[in-house]
Amino acid sequence: QNNYKVTVCGAAGGIGQPLSLLLKLNPLVTELNCYDIAPFTPGVACDLSHIETASKVKGYFFDRFAGQESLKDALNSADVVVIPAGVPRKPGMTRDDLFGSNASVVKTIFECASVACPDAIFCIITNPVNSCVPIACEVLKKANKLNPRRVFGVSTLDIVRANTFVGEMCGVNPKEVNVPVIGGHSGITIVPLFSRATPKVTIPADKLDALTKRVQEAGTEVVKAKAGHGSATLSMAYSGARFANNVMRALMGEPDVIECAYVMADVTDVDYFASPVKLGKCGIEQNCGVGDINEYETKLLCDALEQLKRDIQKGVDFANQD
Ligand code: APR
Image (cartoon, rainbow, N blue to C red):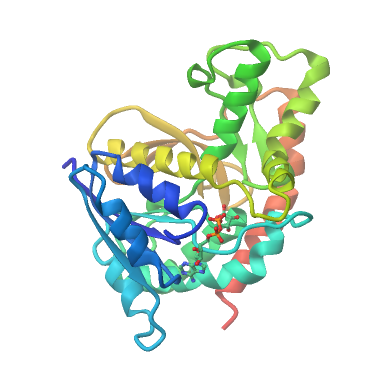
């Protein structure tokens, strides 16, 4: 199969619109459903539908008289669901500060997805990703529909940023650099593994701390630069589209598609963790785990796990509170 039905939840937003555009340009996507609570979402879909690629685009928005019916229609039998729905950060906020608004958004989407497209591959962009992925899995588990091989937190932007910054520092094309990034997707939980970059790069010892910090705080760099107008949208849309494309290539049977993603896993003593995963026809084919890391990275990982545990528990507790 090389034709996929993809639904974007949050399609009218700062990430959702460019993400939907990139998916409209992807020849593997034959049906693109754009859902958002914003009433102008059918307009976004109409706009996209005029682009001369073969895929069909449909727009859906939340109609309070119909409950979640339009969300279910948008999700119905989707192969891949990409979720950037929710509120973005303002200056001074951490990703965790979004929990209060976004946890219930994710819960509702997954309650509907467990009915409308339980076998889809889910790619969660909504922050805090560290907690939203556990919420999604708990909701699916309650509905008896959890397949942990198919639920992903998209941490691709951390890799994209690490590749870019290393490329700049070492004078190589960032497209040819691949830095695995493990842990979570927020602040100190983001653990870039420069020692495992391909091709091999040498980061001067006196620059390692600053480079690590820059990757960990790159989202905040954007939030500050946007001065109250949200967080990363274009680079996140690129990263979401890149991840969805890799998922579809793997679904198609392409071998050796390996990408770091934040998933349910038992590779460390936390239940959710980002590490390189081999993608296949059923989602995760194999979790490649942490692999060899140096002393510096081991220390970063230790610091990350404490925070990650708290973030995960918060998501699990929220999903099970009633
Ligand atoms: N269902 C569907 N869409 C929703 C819902 C919901 N329950 N709640 C909000 N939305 C939509 C909004 O209407 C808006 O169009 O999600 C979109 C979010 O867009 P922006 O406000 O522009 O935010 P964006 O920058 O795209 O970030 C969205 O992704 O990376 C994360 O931290 C970021 O959590 C944030 C999310």
